[in-house]
View 1 (cartoon, helix red, strand yellow):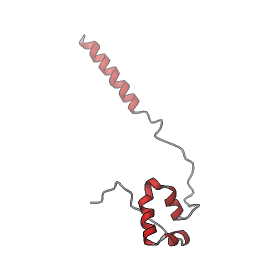
View 2 (cartoon, rainbow, N blue to C red):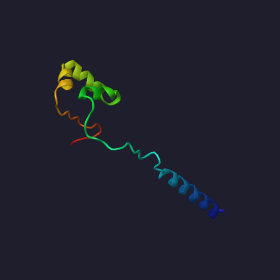
View 3 (cartoon, one colour):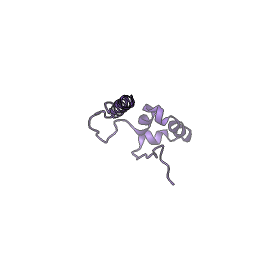
View 4 (cartoon, rainbow, N blue to C red):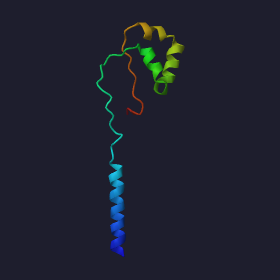
Length: 85
């Protein structure tokens, strides 16, 4: 009886581990990146409201919209979730 439950437990554990290692949705081939934006920085930020909605509001309040639309500048943003100690 003990060997049967041990065998069932081992089979169940192996099945769970096998399913946990399934990486079917892990990698998506989205093609090559050109490294050049087709739109200006402000339009790019507006297209991704989930990530940049509050940043767009700050840019509007600061009056920097025309600068980001017309000038050629580099805009850097610190990634969220990184803690610098």
